[in-house]
Length: 184
Image (cartoon, rainbow, N blue to C red; front, side, top):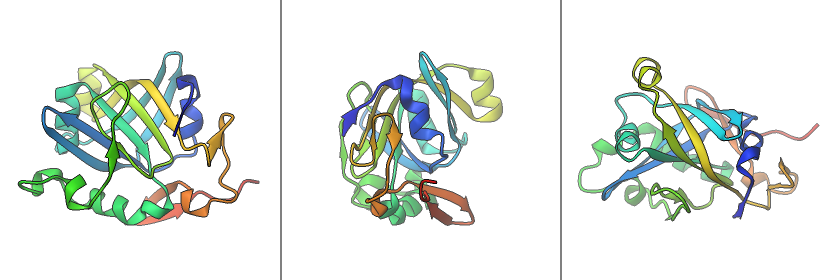
């Protein structure tokens, strides 16, 4: 994992990968799959993410004011499907990380855990916009730190050529995913 300029976060997200959103507050944490994540601005770097009001992830995000965007890859597809299919509220006495054996590591500037094995990570601080959050489930956040797996992202661009298992994934619909394709 190598730090990247936060002004380059659009390069991590512009191809529309499925993401894993992680959040934590006090001694609780959660993870969920999310497809509606978008780069918004360069300086300061901002993103938007749509998180349904009923999710446990959102409850923790709003309580803490931060969250992380993790970019999973092909080798993590089963885990992506698992965490996207059940709410953290439905796992009494445990959490999704423990339930599915998801390894994490500490973020540099926020409390939400980062998921090991992903190929990109964005640490985000929520910019409070109550109208957007309550009406559209839309969050705007400043990216306060960004990191990428330098095997597939360096010099400001993706290069998956020799790393098929590290290609990002894209949710099409109905539980169907595609891997990022070949460079043209």
